[in-house]
Picture 1 (cartoon, one colour):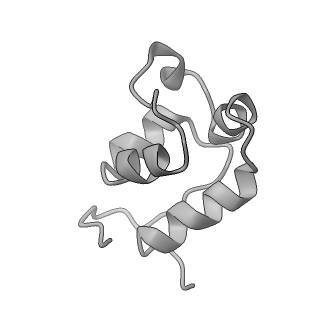
Picture 2: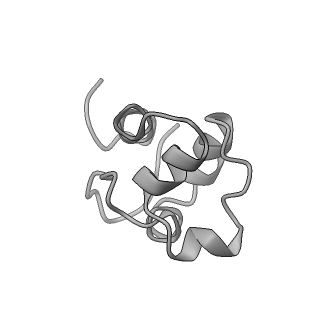
Length: 76
């Protein structure tokens, strides 16, 4: 999945979910693919990727890597 965003800053687990989605709209589908079906909930405005992963029982660093690779922000 290729992202057409001009900013190519890799995602890090401290970024807010809302910030990730704002910079990389394709991340919505990737997060949902990880089991985060509530990416549009109000908590996403103040929740970091690490916090959201903890709530969903996921490893934040694994999800961070998955997003960066799938969005073409880092090499696999």
